[in-house]
Image (cartoon, rainbow over all chains, first blue to last red; front, side, top):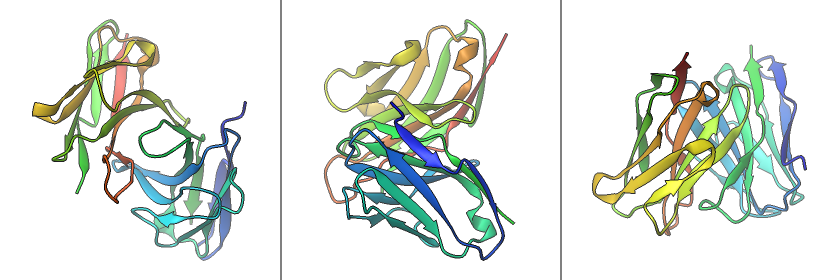
Amino acid sequence: NAGVTQTPKFRVLKTGQSMTLLCAQDMNHEYMYWYRQDPGMGLRLIHYSVGEGTTAKGEVPDGYNVSRLKKQNFLLGLESAAPSQTSVYFCASSYQGWNTEAFFGQGTRLTVV
Amino acid sequence: AQSVTQLGSHVSVSEGALVLLRCNYSSSVPPYLFWYVQYPNQGLQLLLKYTTGATLVKGINGFEAEFKKSETSFHLTKPSAHMSDAAEYFCAVSPVGGATNKLIFGTGTLLAVQP
């Protein structure tokens, strides 16, 4: 049982490049989330989805886009990477919502130079 | 707006000593409350949560937390620290009801366990 899988685990981008982070879950969860983790700031919600075909903005959505075309996948896109987007990105999923346990992937360490 | 404060970004204890990690929330209505643990180079995993009912909640690995409404607190404790408890711990809150459905994390407390 894989749980939540993030691809890739590490990436270095040049300023202005684009990329997509993939998150896949095999638990049939409705809710999926993308967070970024920065030192001293905890986890901040970028975007989330409450079901297939739906997405919503979190606390820090600027510079990111997401899509949830299939229930099991949640993609995070950076259209034009900036050094301020250097961070560790975590995907998570949960069965019903904010009051149920969130299962996290192992993270993607992104460096923008 | 809902917020959560973790007092102490770094806590160091000796092996076998009591672990106490502090978490306070700001909300007029008690939210759902969570503690997550992050081991090095891994994602977060749930230690325990409080939604309703008994205010003393037991979690995995011998941890427990007590919800105290009067103090707006949800401190995490473990009677005897083990070397394997070294990790970063995050308190999180989720508002009950309303339109603002989010899980809000504190800034984390890094626990070091000295031999």
